[in-house]
Amino acid sequence: MRKVIAMGETIMDILFRNNQPIAAVPGGSCFNTIISLGRTETPSIFLGYTGGDVVGQQTIDFLKDNGVNTDYFELREDEKSAISLAMLNEQGDANYLFYKTPPNAKPETSIPTFTPDDVLLFGSFYASSPGTRAYVQKVLKATKNAGSIVYYDLNFRKSHQHELEQLMPALIENFEHSVVVRGSADDFEIMYNERDARTIYREHIAQYCPLFICTSGPGLITVCMPHTTIDFPVPPVNTVSTVGAGDNFNAGLIYGLIQNGIKRDDLANLSEDMWIKLLKSGCAFAAEVCQSEHNSISREFAAGLPHL
Image (cartoon, rainbow, N blue to C red; front, top):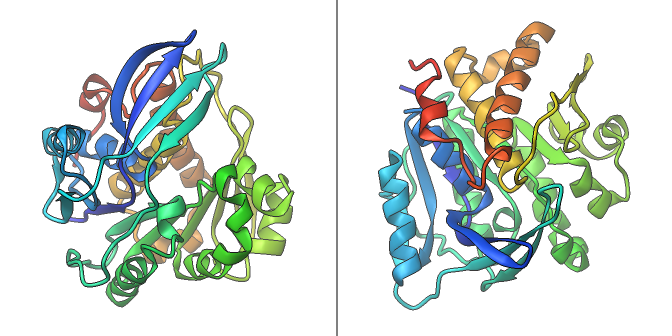
């Protein structure tokens, strides 16, 4: 059976509203995605590490409790787990403060066996950081040899804008290895001072990766391909918190790929109707999370989904 492998950082998100803490949940961009997929009973693996402290133990327990394989996840006794403070405004949008060290991973760290049409999700600073680069390249090489689907979510934060020139070779290499590149208009405004999806695709993505998905919060989602472009309006949502919205859009879209039996070689020729179906799945997962103070879909929502 096909599986999803996510690779990235973990962090304990502490949410504040009106300057008061309201929730604390394990998080991280790819982490949030894999928790949701684990709850759907999709075979899931997480590659990463955290500190060997009480927060780290809570994180690994959380992965296991949600059906995610942790054979390639480390608890490091010599590191402290990362923490973020997410300050929610009246619209549920978050401003973050991070307390963490730069990500690092030894290139000799073991990786799972990839098979054709497995899905690798990776992104954020972890995907381009000098401290993780050799390990990320090792994983990408394994996916290429196996014929897996590589889904790259940029999630490029403003806090790394001053490093953009240094990081650009790794970002481009990630584009080249990917089957799908997904980013938000905010990501590309930081990187290229550009928000228009068609311009971003034409000038920065198409030469490296033929399939690009651009999201813009409650605005349009645009799918760009060599032969066509699809604009999809996001259904309105009563938002409590936007923390994890993009991560769970990824989860819903990947869930749709697997549920509909869509393989790597199928992606170039999907019909517009199928793309709409996938985007609706992504938006449904994102909406579920936006209506709560959690980073991933609820178990009740997952229980109501079709399963293979």
